[in-house]
Image 1 (cartoon, helix red, strand yellow):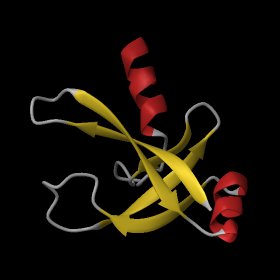
Image 2 (cartoon, helix red, strand yellow; image 1 turned 90 degrees about the horizontal axis):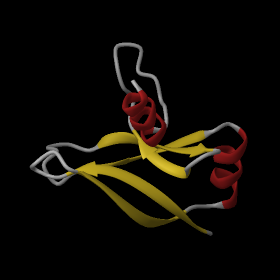
Image 3 (cartoon, one colour; image 1 turned 90 degrees about the vertical axis):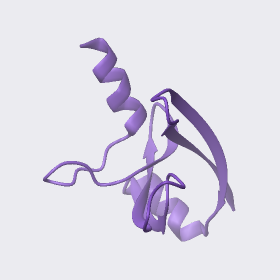
Image 4 (cartoon, one colour; image 1 turned 180 degrees about the horizontal axis):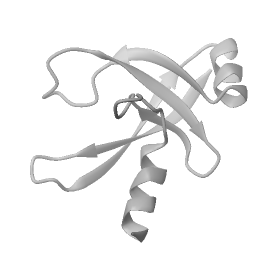
Length: 90
């Protein structure tokens, strides 16, 4: 099964880019993402990154499937699009 995943990126100038990619996953991972909220796989969000990280594919009720990574000291996993909207409202 293929899912459409939104990726929030930035270019070298700091401009925000949104890329949509298609990822093939199994039915079990799809159900896990919809019920639990997330599953992970290794990858790079940017070609500038040296090593691969565990990237989390998160299901957000507002934005659908998005890719994120653990952020902060407590390594929270949140939708980056929702974080960006909350930051804009401040």
